Image (cartoon, rainbow, N blue to C red; front, side, top):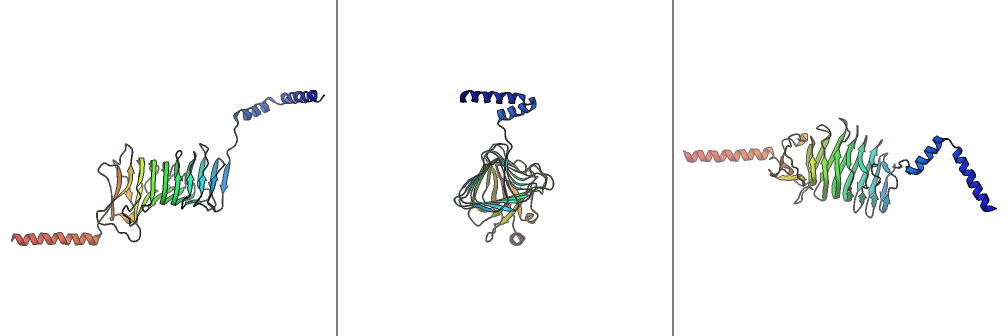
Length: 310
């Protein structure tokens, strides 16, 4: 009957399976038991604007071919969440990520690389970018060139590294422009390469605060170059002090001798730490004309005292 035929066919199928080679059976059982599958990659090679909720379903995301991904008002981009996988903004060819308005980017559990073996950039004028696990890498790998420019919004990271696994051809730039951003992280590590390849830049604006201070639990700035700039309409006064990076954990900036100023800042700025050595600060140096007037004033006082003495 039909029932018996069904059982009979099942039995025949079982015998056929037994007839397979032992190696083939082992491979089949291994795949079935492990449930493993090859990692998948999403390739974004054209400009696109994200203004709604978008989740990358693949294990990895590659932004390439000079594409710019703009996350704007109403947009939420959720990056790959598979631990051990990654998002590359720029790999093989350059790529760019722009976050503006109320746009949000959620980092997931994977690492995010800005400029891996090639150039890549992330610009924040608003919105938010958050990672509770994983690391944001600027200029990862040999030849990497990564730039993170933040002038607004909220940047919250587990950790940020510059030129990780890089070499003398890797260049990283972290630029903070103005005072409208909030920047917090657990660790800031710029110590992977020699001086001149990692630049920490600050552009002061004409507000009460002037600059958004980077707040981090731990910091190792290595031999980074500090590049100071000012927005149009603002000129710092002689001796004015600006807080650049503050350590919120137990560490301190005990030795900043490895840091250097950009060529155009030498003679115009000096670097120091706060009294508790928790904050790296930049101090405006008086302009030559101001120094000359100050010198003349001192000479005048001395001359008057001498005349009075006579």
